[in-house]
Image (cartoon, rainbow over all chains, first blue to last red; front, side, top):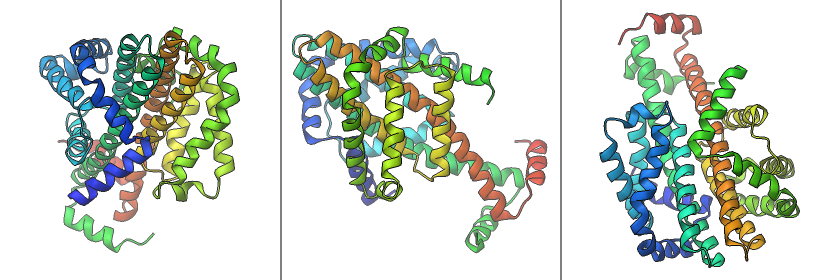
Length: 187
Length: 187
C-alpha cells in the first residue's frame, strides 16, 4: 500500500469505529495515570492466554519478547498520535499474525480481553468520577476498535494471498498462467 | 459444524474474550433499563454507517429490515442465554456477511461503534453509580468481543471456501481434480 491508501484507511477506520479528536486527547491525558499499571495489564492478558490450549503453543517460547512488544504498543495507545505511522504499524501486525499462522479470531479475542482489563483499571482510577470514567472507557474502546479494523484488513489480504499460493502449489500451476487465466476470465 | 464443535467454539470464545457468568447476569439485569433506548442506539449506529461511502451501498435499500434485525439482536445481548443457539446464530451472521460481500473490517468497526454507543448509554443510566457503570461496561464489552470472535471464524471459513470456488472457476478445474491433487500434494 502507498501512503495515500494508508491515509484513506486511517480516515475510514476512524470514522467507522467512531474515533473523535476528543478521544485521542482523552487517551493522551490518561498516559501518566495508566503507565504505572501497564505491565500488570499485559501480565494479566498473557495469563489468560496461556490458559487457552489453542493459544498457548504460540506463546510459550517467546513470552518475554511478546510482553515487551505488548507494553510498547500499549504505550502508543496512550500517547498517539493515531496517524499514518500508527496505521502502518498496525497494518503490519495483521500480516505478522498470518505469517505466524495465528487464527483470525485471536485478534478480536485479544482486543476484547485487553479492553476489559483497561476498563477495569479505569474503573479503579476514576471510581469517584463517573463522567471521566465513561469518557475514558469510550476512548479506549473506540481506539482499540479502530486498531482491530486496520489489523483485520491486512490479515485478510495476507491470508487470501497465502491461499492463492497454496492453490498454485497444489495444482502445480504457474503464477503467470493463473494471472493470464484470471484476466481472461468472464463470469 | 455439529453441536459438539459449536459447544467447543462457545467455551473457547467465552474464555478468550473473558466472559464470566457474572457478566451474563449483569447483562440480563440491565434489560429493563436499556430496552427503552435500544431503538435510539440502533438509529444512531445506522446514521454513522450511512455516512461512510464504503458502507452506504449495502444499507440504503434495506434500512428498515436491517434496523429490525439489529434491534432483535440487541434484545438478545441483554437477555441471553449465551449458549449454543446464540453461537449458532452469530456464526451464521459471519457467513451471511460473506454472501452479502461485506468487507471483513465491517464487523470489527460495527462492534466498536455499537459498544461505544452502549457505553455512553450506560454512562447516562449509571451516572451516579461508578461501580455499576464499570461492571456493566465490561460485561457489554466482553460479550460483544465474544460475539465478534464467533462471527469472524465463520466469516473466514466462508471467505476461504469462496476463494477456492473462484480459483476453480478461473482455472476451469473440477473440484474432484483439485481435491485429488490436494490429497496427493506433499510440501
